[in-house]
Image (cartoon, rainbow, N blue to C red; front, side):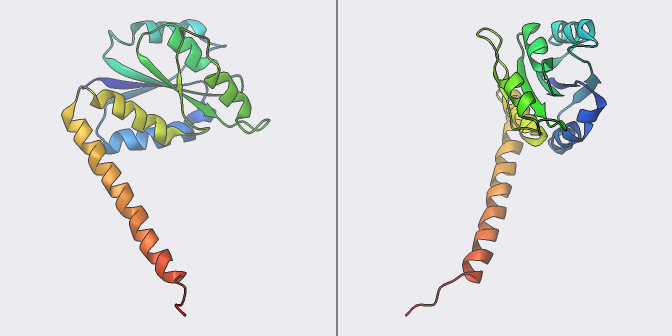
Length: 167
């Protein structure tokens, strides 16, 4: 199976990446995690992206806050799917990162998940890899069914709790 490349702009993004890693571990998807800054280590970020396909990656997750140019730098240097995770910062609560990640110019696509959306980034990565991996596709189907079951169990509890009395 191809790996998921995970790049974060700084170690402050680690809590978001930990959520993604947890999902990838549950689905038994191999991955690598790196810290490359679009602004402080642009050559490293560019090199990682340019060589990702040859290094066995099938998709890349890029997480960054504030100006959040990392996903765009990665996407500009690879033809692999890139999923951007805008991360919260103390100044603008992640809105700055969201706008930086989602406003990519034509020809440089970046799929963007919610602010601090590590879980969804991992799941989207899995769905992309599952296009060529039936075993992984089955794991995702089971996961969705389990999530639906949890919601329906809560529905039953709350339906009973707030049941109106018939007249």
